[in-house]
Amino acid sequence: MYPVIRMTWQMWKTRKSPKLPFDGTHVSTHYCLPWDLDIFWELNNGRTLTLYDLGRIPLGHRTGLIDALRRRGWGLTVAGSSPRYRRRIRAFEKVTMKSRGIGWDDRFFYVEQSMWKTSGDCAGHVLIRSAATGPKGIVPPAEVAAEMGLDPISPPLPDWVTAWVAADAQRPWPPMQD
Image (tube, rainbow, N blue to C red; front, side):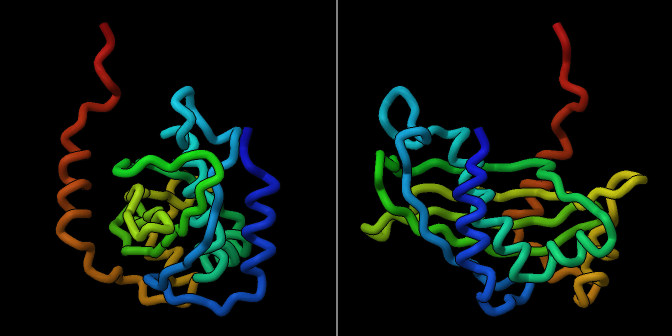
């Protein structure tokens, strides 16, 4: 089940937070709750991706993305992700999440997020590819950026992001069926 109450809480907490530039970092804190656990009593890998929403949506609010989407009647969807899991997060552990926009290309926005344990260790990191959607399909990110009051030309994407984009483009679609 989607953590609606937790998302509502995060949005409430950030409602009066100062606006951020597109590449500004939104910092939030979260706890690993019993319903987030897998059979090994640690944060479930799928639930981790859901929890990243709890940082990404408030980031979108603080950067003006959510307002731009609402004004134009656009939606937002995750179009890909590349997670890294490095440290276990156990029940009731507190983590600090850092979320920031990286840039965009002709179809997608790229957001980087990480979870940090109180020990200072990075527990996980994810690169998210998102698309704004409208009645005709994907809305060009430059158009969304302009609606946000940004320069429609993206900041340069880091090499590791462009390498992931290039590698993902080699993946067959649709996948093979046997």
